[in-house]
Image (cartoon, rainbow, N blue to C red):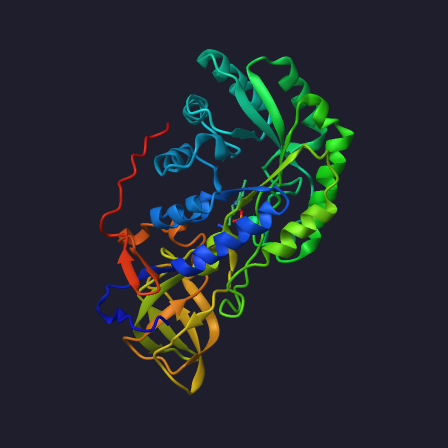
Length: 399
Ligand code: LLP
């Protein structure tokens, strides 16, 4: 997969990141967004490896967070506080206080109940909280039901019928500075329709509720742009040009409103692979199991969302045959792929599970007391690991 590198001496499993591809993706996204004056916050939940963050920081992105520790990590790694957005339905008092102390760009508030707490904590801190109201627009993102967030049945966002009350509360409360609206309808969205509906709905709400009159000047449309899991080699970089053009063509909001995005997967998804060694090829009654040393602890997505990740065995040749590729974890759902066609696979082969840059390492688990898999990075002739020389994160404990 990477000519010139011999992986056989490296302890598996590990995450492997192509920094050239990451840089290319980030540069393209930044360029296409800037055509329209859009601002992108990188959704740090997708991947918080310091090396990855450094590339994204250099591309000029802000950060989108969903926990106090993420806010802290973003600050630690040098992202400016005024480029950090913080969403989440269950922010603790300590997390809200931390955001206030650090004067972040926006607390994306998800309920009237939270709004009251933000006001109270801001008042106690003698601060004015910058708040964007996250609205649940009732739009079906047409993605896996576990990563759909914009339906009325989902816990996210303020129901539309409470928006007026929330706006009035902001207006009446001196410790809240209302800056605009926030939406995020879901993740891994691969058709343009949900984004078109989002743009139409956001424009409609902006006008109907006269958001500008309340001081609104930011419209944050969240993330969700999908990647091509089935064929990453042919589709290494998402079509950012079409995505931002579509938004520009369907938004009808006052010119002075600044449009923000929170892209996660589309920026980092394709640059990473999970590299794992085959421990056994086991003959079952009806199938052959390839048992790898990586499991759902290193890549949870197939078990949690029935996600499909392309699996490659570059060291082997034909004949192609069907295998179930499974991990070593004591769970029946620890399956990477069923009936996947691979060249003849044997003990000791290295498999590359592709499109693991987003929501793989960041969702890894210690279940079964597994060790954390390290990350390695390459660009052209350089190859290095996260095991050495990485600055330590100082993570405060939020209770
Ligand atoms: N903004 C907010 C408020 C979010 O909740 C998310 C993702 C994003 C932005 C970034 O979305 P993206 O551009 O990455 O689609 N673990 C799941 C994905 C969960 C996404 C959670 N929220 C997966 O592996 O598919």
